[in-house]
Image (cartoon, rainbow, N blue to C red; front, side, top):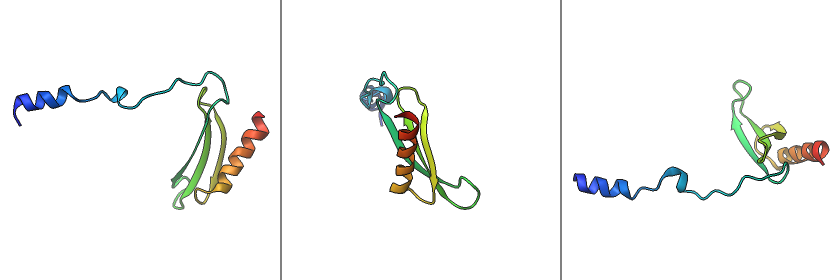
Amino acid sequence: MSEEQIETIISHEIALEDSHPRGEKPKYFGEIIEQDGSIHHWFGDKKACLHLAIDKATSTIVGAYFDTQETLNGYYHVLYQILTNYA
């Protein structure tokens, strides 16, 4: 490629921070709770799934549960923790 072609490509790149629109961070605790499962070797050789719920406004972990795989049952346990501790 010529120097001119490289400069054209570089000048048309979108900055990483501008490539995905971002919404405002929630103002209040409990407004948005994000949940996800993460499968890893948490305890040695056997894989397990950590189901986790985090409050987006404060980054507080509001529920967590380990299961053998990512399951609805795991998310039910996390929801139960949220309702028991924060409702």
